[in-house]
Amino acid sequence: MDKIKVGIIGTGNISSIYLQNGSKFEAAEVVACADLNVERALAKADEYGIRGGSVEELLADPEIGMIINLTIPQAHASVSMQALEAGKHVYVEKPLGVTLEEGRKVMELAAAKGLRVGCAPDTFLGGGIQTAIKVIADGWIGTPVSATAFMMSGGHETWHPDPAFYYQRGGGPMFDMGPYYLTALVALLGPIAKVSGSTRISYPERTITSAPKYGEKIQVEVPTHVAGLLEFAEGPIGTIVTSFDIKGGSELPLIEIHGSEGTVQVPNPNNFGGNVRLRRAGSKEWFDVPPAFPNTENSRGIGAADMAKAIMTGRAHRASGELAYHVLEAMVGIHVAAESGERYVMTSDCRKPAPLPLGLAPLQLD
Figure (spheres, rainbow, N blue to C red):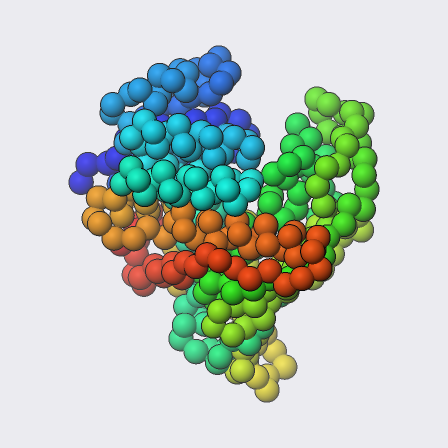
């Protein structure tokens, strides 16, 4: 089977893992990269043995059928629309856009052009969360009734080389990490009907303690502690807290799903593997559920590869633009609800992503 040729736009911090995995999966092959900083793109291209150059050159390349958009969040929508206008399918890093209007414009343009949009995160396609999905689908916890999700962090200024954008428009803990948690919750429980929320900025100024900008100050523009209440269309009620304000650490479980017959602990939604733990009603013990699916290592890019396979076979792709738009609306809705003091009713819907079938080999998608 031939592979769809893929070009990457944006050769910053996250691009390395996409380039490492670029040709491992069936159906997609990364053959070129580009960046506003052409020298950086050329250096990445040389490192990975692919073509490098300007964004304009990449978009004009007739061999490229799909773009992976790894630019900063504020540029996600504009770059995705450039790629769509150039006739390329687009897979974009999360979030789909920093506003609902941006996300809507991307989806509308893709529909008008007859092109596909996919969006990270694709970690829910890893062996960890896919195993948790199977546990719930097979009835091990009975009927799901509630969920909790916690991303408790002290912020990124202690380790990231250029952390300011995490505290600017399009940043904050919900827009940074919320997509992992909300995408996993939708994959586990289905779409969200209503949200409520509360937010705050606990520390209006941050000091960078990482190189190369050690000592520089960041003025915080977005909420850094976000608490949301999620009402799922199928009935469960969820709680999500994302924070950059937890200076003393936390031992809260990352994600738990509680059902009428038991509880399942879901592994870190920012990873592809991790332990799935199950405790049945009436039992005092937790036990580990062995992984039932492959791709438990860092498999970033599997969502783009799945989209490429879907384009070739005509099926729906799993890390879809519709899913990403629904997650984007939930994040926006939590902030809107926090400002208004009123529950936000979701206007978008999405299908729960199709689970992977049992028996797949590593890197296989169907």
